[in-house]
Length: 462
Ligand code: FCB
Image (cartoon, rainbow, N blue to C red):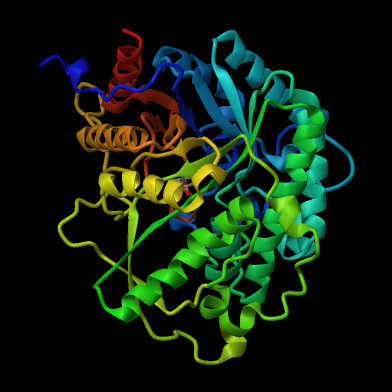
């Protein structure tokens, strides 16, 4: 059997892409008028990011973007998903716009278009201007308004050249890792503050969609990291824990976005934290639930959930993620360098279940991230034979094709990530790239997974 026959086959017009995010690759943190973001503050605080790593230099993509675009062209992708750093555009979060920041993204977009690659821009991949966090961050509604203003500026500048726009990347991480677990910037551990953040992120999304429509963009959507939560056992307690996990990870986003309501399970999930939600206003659901052209989904792994007692019995100290469930290690599965289990079937199941739940209210889907961190080694010949990552990508693309065959309308797939990069609280120790980055020399080396993905894309066009 030739290798190409082993590739899953996707319908004509299916979009293949690669993804990155601003803070993870750009560096140039203090250049050309960029203001500080919450991730600059968080990564510079002692002890929060592994190895004391920061995004100050990262992959130096701010200066080396032509090399990035050349790698994308050689890869043969249809589209490149990148994110725009809000603090490059509006350094203080409100007020003056920084023309040099806009210029950088205009140059990147022009370079992509010249290479025949469609840009897909994410407006918020977690780098909130620090000045806005100082005024309350996503806990306060004002941040949603500033987000809409920033969106209008960027879309006004780039809407003619960027067809696909993503408002927020994984708001679950912004709200809950950022304001409840404290493992992401700004590192808060709160109850109602995190729930208010979740709501204001959705309001910000709705206001940004309005701004994108006003600018006449072709496609507007949002990216969620929906989770497949599996019960550790068949017990009633574990199944109830799955409901609480589902509420926090999935329903808090999909119900307002796709069904025009708040999750009916929120009281059993958050108890008194969600009562008297004074941050919600009349009209918010209509704003949040505006029709979308696509839903972005990032998928990496399933989560096995077990019932667990309250970690914090004092209600005053309860965070929003003290939902009385714990993650259990999945026996028998291979685990990646993130210690995430590899279960491609659950990718298919997630998409099919979403279609079953929302039916025609589900917009077309783009998989905006999928990939794996592995323990890469550079061989004596300089190559990176990342067989585990190749297997991961092949098996997940095959699982994705199974979802298409089951009737789920998926239009595109973006591998995470083009380059090894700053993996948030894990720093540079976790490598997700299909291209290796040597952080001492900034040398880029395509790994075997890059060559495999390239051949897979080429095979679609045979
Ligand atoms: C997602 C993020 C992305 C990257 C991958 C591994 O949660 O959107 O920036 O860190 O995980």
